Length: 85
Image 1 (tube, one colour):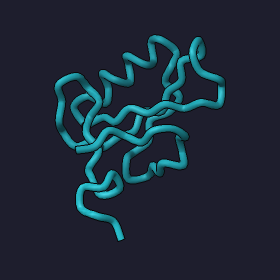
Image 2 (tube, one colour):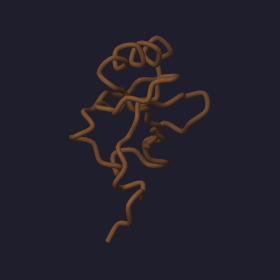
Image 3 (tube, helix red, strand yellow):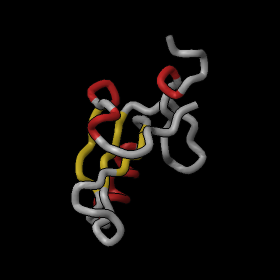
Image 4 (tube, helix red, strand yellow):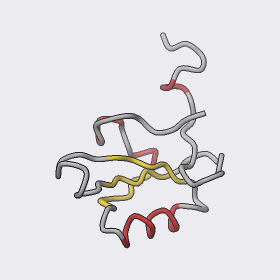
């Protein structure tokens, strides 16, 4: 049984600087200069910041995919989970 406040029961928050809104999207990315091709990192995004964060990663060639949080599972991207409150 999960205890209150455990990472699995907390709501992920948006990764945009200063934003504390609930995340609705997962942006999956990889920096090819730093990471192996199969490595995937994630940012969480609220509705308001999804496009901005996607463009930030996209112009650098880092963005791999954008997935609705409801459709994403931690197994989709190895490594640390999403930021949560």
